[in-house]
Length: 183
Image (cartoon, rainbow, N blue to C red; front, top):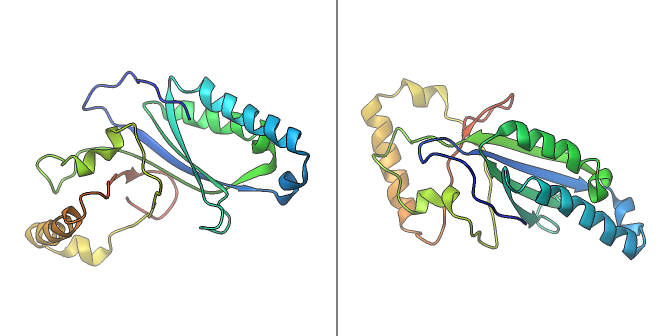
């Protein structure tokens, strides 16, 4: 999908959205030419928003029930992502799709590190790896009742283990919306 430079200062947050689409099986019964036109119409919308929103596409077919297509989008304007989603659902394959899951968040400096490592700055990279794992999580009440030093110690251990796998990139987002996850 399209990649563009965005007007963003280094300290400004990225808004990031993971949108999972379930495609109606009726789509696969359409003639090949109709499906090709539908994919092109969908891609055209993505390209029209490329200046505001960078989009990477992943297939979930055979990996996750209810996720045929996952779009990972990054931009500086959440409103543009919302408008883009509405347009996608009304164009081509989008007319045969429904959103099966969606996560939305933003970047900000971690309270547990002095500065992010290159592994943790993956959100700023424009190349993507073959596979993507997205997992929402929340910390428990017990976590917040621990002392700051105890939490920092646990996070240091978590980061130490993560850094043993330097080929795995990480993106930490602070979640927004009505779901239960925090990150």
